[in-house]
Image 1 (tube, rainbow, N blue to C red):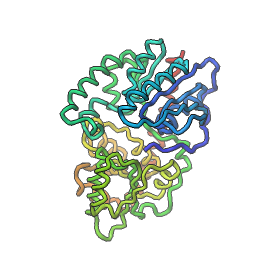
Image 2: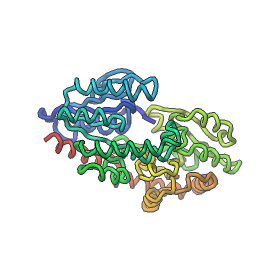
Image 3: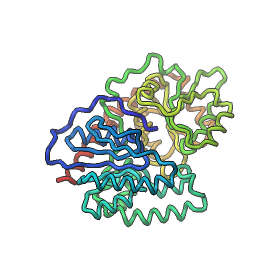
Image 4: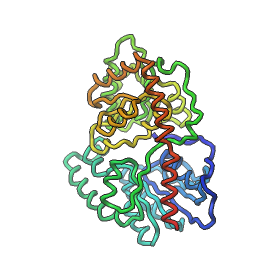
Amino acid sequence: MQPQTTEAPRIATSAPSACRGKVVHLSSAHKSTDLRIFQRECRSLAAAGYPVTLIAQGEHSRELDGVSVQALPRPASRLHRMTRTLWQVYRKAVRSDAMLFHFHDPELIPVALLLRLRGRAVIYDMHENVPHQILGGDDKRWIPRWLRRPVAWLFAAFERLAAPRFSAVIAANTEIARHAQRLNRRVVLIGNYPEALEFRSFAPAPGRFTSGRIANFGGISFRTCSREVVHALSLLAADSNATMVLAGSATADALAADLKTLPGWARVEFIGAQPRPRILQELRTAAMAMVLFSPTPNHYGVGSNRFYEALAAGLPVIVSNFPLWRALIDRLGCGIAVDPRDPAAIARAIEQLLTHPEEAAQMGARARQAFLDEFCWDSEERKLLALYRQLTA
């Protein structure tokens, strides 16, 4: 999901400086309200005194929280996005006459290289390990299975040629950072952590751990194991009060139609993509959060917005039992790691948390403390601003 921001403008972390040149964030695939791009990175930079422009998909151009948003029309198709939209991004970027560009989609690498040829500083914000993403299949089902390996190889070769030419690479988690360090000498890890300001006054609803409500904001997709989760709901005891609030987009129409025929769908409240206030309200009333990903290498690193927001909301989490995820969950003591392909294991984890509300509350308290101690945006903002100071000096 790409929820909208409703917060008041953040307080500047440093005094604005007239010598700071314009910076432009570029995205052909993300919406202009994207949580990481707009709400965290762009707003942090604007509050620190940088003139910030965001070029991304949106309904209309506007000035929001100190950021000049230049809206791109929604592309009619993926081919349209990778051709006409890229040209629109490049034209707007050149017209901005900025000194530093920060791009967020691998399809924008050709645009970024052209900007480097014009002598501009360019940051590659690597949200995914794209070769792993292609090979995994769940994230790139539009690529025929027989083509995935050669496409992954070609992209990896192109990325190896292009990435060293960028001024810096930002990685969204530790696994992506390891991949990026083989491509560029200046890599900064900036996690998808929630803002302390947004969750500082977060007030959970009374009795939340006996409510039976399961927050799952991963939408309907193969990558978020939707079929296995709905199957797991059908395995719960008949007298269970479990209800899964499923938010987000349905990225696979055939899968969505199939899920509605399963017995477990009776326990699903599908609310689709929602604005930020509704998401926060669901987190207040939920008893637990479900953050499952399919077992492909691109999902092994811990970097999910949904996971860190569950911690911020003080919720126990059910996550995939990949080594890094399990190690973090065990260290924090804030949830249960399960095989994401095993509906019976998912159902057992749900039952454990629903039938032991005191234990769930303790896990939630540890999750909240982990957010306050380790996983809030303040620390990542400092790293972002430090990188910008280096590149604009």
